[in-house]
Image 1: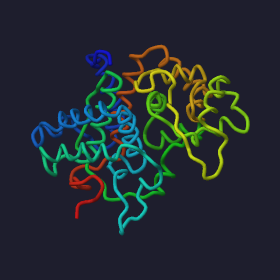
Image 2 (image 1 turned 180 degrees about the vertical axis):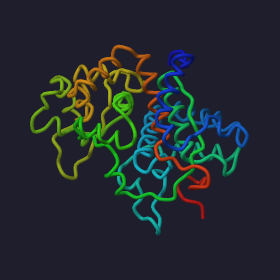
Image 3 (image 1 turned 135 degrees about the vertical axis):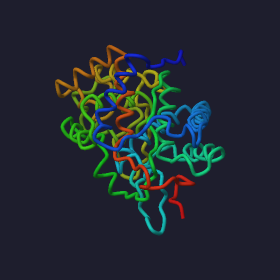
Image 4 (image 1 turned 90 degrees about the vertical axis):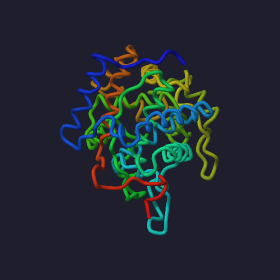
Length: 323
């Protein structure tokens, strides 16, 4: 890991400006929400996240992805964390497999040990995603906080809200627009596909029966070695999202897009429209530019349909609403 990059001065002003565009028209979240009620909250979360990633580098991608899923489905309210129950047998997590739930349990337990019933699970997801970025990418940003945890989690909401890896560019743009996000956010946040893994089922449509002409032929040949033609009931292997530096969050994703060495239909779709293609090429050429855009988009995404004040609750355990 290289030296930590801190976005400061003009760069932080750019982050604040872009993030303000959404907070001006929705619930305003403050910075340092826990400065009095739990002053060690962010440090506790950061230390726990760093220790978890030291033990298992894949945790970084899992925590970033979980925050994204949480915000896109019901808003950033930790509804993605709720387990099934008699009252709700099919919560969001039953709709799509995600890694990282045990990591969140450990982070929450560490926070509860210093400040019981104070820090929401929704805020923990936002902080943990930020700390995963700083650990895996070497840069950080300030996170607004004060979110409350939701009491509702429905599997069907995942299918109606999450952008699909099979989406073309217009569906992607519409999906982000529906959440108050724009083209900058769509392209910048896609950079998270520089780390983590993907199941073959998410992209074998580009390999069989014929290789997608927008995929590099040599790359397709390599993928077929791990991902055979789909057969019902057969195992669903995983591959790294990026062949190059798969554990480092960076602008490598955009270089992969330009080289046509990305997995998903939705990733390749970023080149099919002039305005998104230009943003991809800009991010591929300028790492710092992408970092500024990514930080601003993460802050902005973290404000989608948040619960504040007396709405929702602060869960004691992230997997269940308080009794």
